[in-house]
Structure formats: structure tokens, C-alpha cells
Length: 81
Image 1: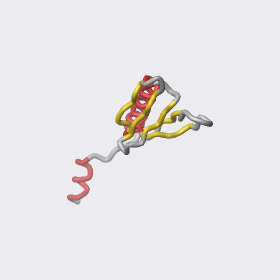
Image 2: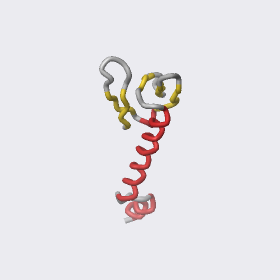
Image 3: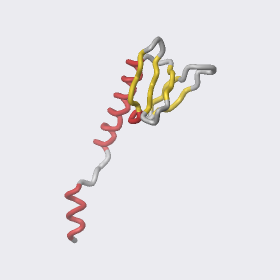
Image 4: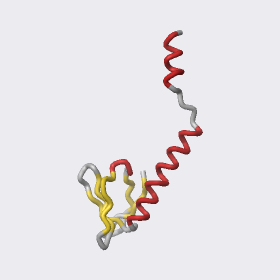
């Protein structure tokens, strides 16, 4: 999830699943449209939202490299025993 600041009274912070982002519009304000049809007007510029999505994905890939992953070959070998 990435943290964004929703525009409006109180400027609440929201957490958005970047895998659901379909479009980021650059009207005078930034509009983030999700696959669900929900749209959010956010304080961050579109380039910052993009940077946060890239950072989020990089963190996932980095974590995957440090966590041992059982491959298909290992699982198949165990099934033969």
C-alpha cells in the first residue's frame, strides 16, 4: 500500500493499493482512478504518486530476494517421496 493525502477538509491520509490504480490524471489537481471505479483527489503530484508505486514494487522485489522461496522443482521432488 502507498500513502497519499486526500484533498478536502482535513486532508486525510489514505492508503491505496497500487495494483488497483488504472489512471493518474493531471488536472490542476491529481486524480487517482482505481479499477473499482473509485476516484481520489490527492495532494501529491502525479510524478510523486508514480515514484511511490515504483518504490512499493521495488520493496516487494527486494523482500522476495531475502525470503527463501520454495520452487516448483522442490515441491515436485517432495511429492515423489
